[in-house]
Length: 112
Length: 110
Image 1: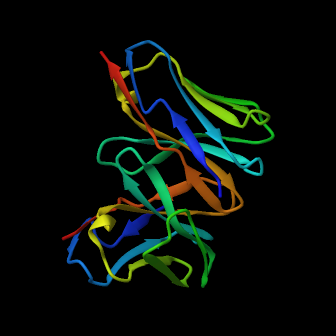
Image 2: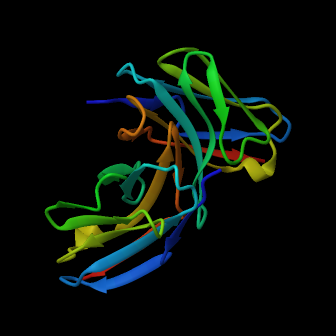
């Protein structure tokens, strides 16, 4: 069974804080993704990575950065958290192009 | 980038009826179209997918059709059951990038 694990289920951070969301997958998948999920807006792609140290912007990268130093780990960084970044964040991974994406359990981030 | 639109946003059906969810995409280079189901409080999970060289695919009560010319694809669920109640997401993929639609909340009334 593929496991995609996000480091926290719930997080509460203050405006202006630097926030790290961590995601680890255990199946040697090439591709990893970060999405945010908001009611009525579906899953919006923030960043994705197709290899170690490689990253590409998704549809809503503003205010976020990512890091992939090891194949199994993909981190999402909020450089200076703002209240409009309060959301559910979902990490996913896939073995290769056009294959099933497996999701983590999600991190509900609240910025106050 | 790719833009995926999904309709309807909510769908209520009687148990045993069929449900149809439709999606359109903008980028003709997209070539992989998965559908995910997300139950309340759980992570999205793949239920069926279709590639651009196939027009239709079936798996028991669910089927997906793809019209490349019109750039739309649809999910069909027959003989709906209460456990089909969930949010369904369509997606389109070009290379690695996987773009989702806005989701459809399906409610199956017993």
